[in-house]
Image (spheres, rainbow, N blue to C red):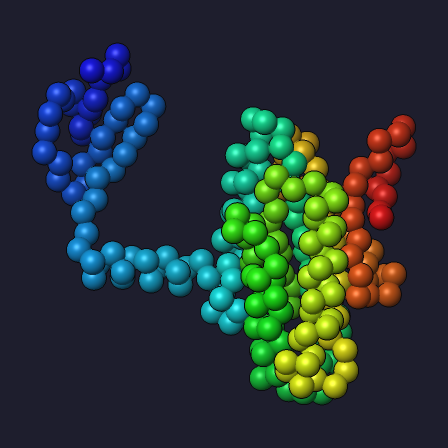
Length: 225
């Protein structure tokens, strides 16, 4: 009954039994009909999981978390909503590996990922960006909320991870935070700003969170808080 009609495999229909693989068009919406048994569905889900999840930490892998950041920016464009990203790495992780061995290094990565997963909202996404570096995507989150989360994560890792793992020296992290309205940025731009803030945190002594933001005065400089 719609003005544009309904099409199955490019043919207009009023009623039609669907077969797996049929393409259904309703206006600008295009659907593909698929029918799978439970075993086949589970196999597809496992393939998807293997393609998107980092096997060491059970958070998203780099390709998946980067894609999600791009999608969240695109989804926020219409309403000019805020979006934030946290980029974090473990301070002096190579030294920890050298002293305690790579198995302990793996356990530390898993413990850090556990803290990250337990610290975020359901909609936020956590991913391993590479090595000992993690990324968190925070939709509809401005500077204040992102910094509060970064500090909560930093403090939790410093207080709990060493005790749980039995590591004698302190385990600390440095975090770079970038926030802006989606209309003012893209994936690469936001990540570049967060990475700059991370390097700033490292330069100022590690075990801290730094935030990037664009100056609103006449100078076109980058400032940190």
